[in-house]
Image (cartoon, rainbow, N blue to C red; front, side, top):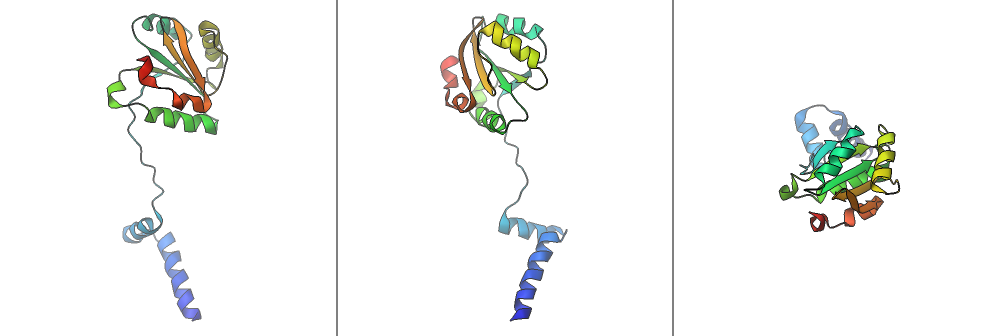
Length: 152
């Protein structure tokens, strides 16, 4: 009986640490692969890294809806919300302009965005801009409950 358990654990050990393709393939089929599968996103991310872009956003918003996504790269909630936000976009929305603002790198720009569009700072935060005005802003999990199509 002891030898039987030893053989079983040796097999598990070998499957786990063996570098051969066959063993790892079997191991992955049994316990699942930990490889990340990148899902295609239809979000047209535009880096927001200059104060001059605020004027450009206001000008663009006269003819189309503009989104600003304020993201904190150290925040777990922000990371989860941005993934869910990306999943809201369909292929038909690939031309919608979404400005990505990294709050940790560009805090002064974030402060100016708040003043320019009269919104209180939140993180994560989504601003929907039309005709130079923030027509909608949401933060945290409320971002994913917005009907994006309503604003396009």
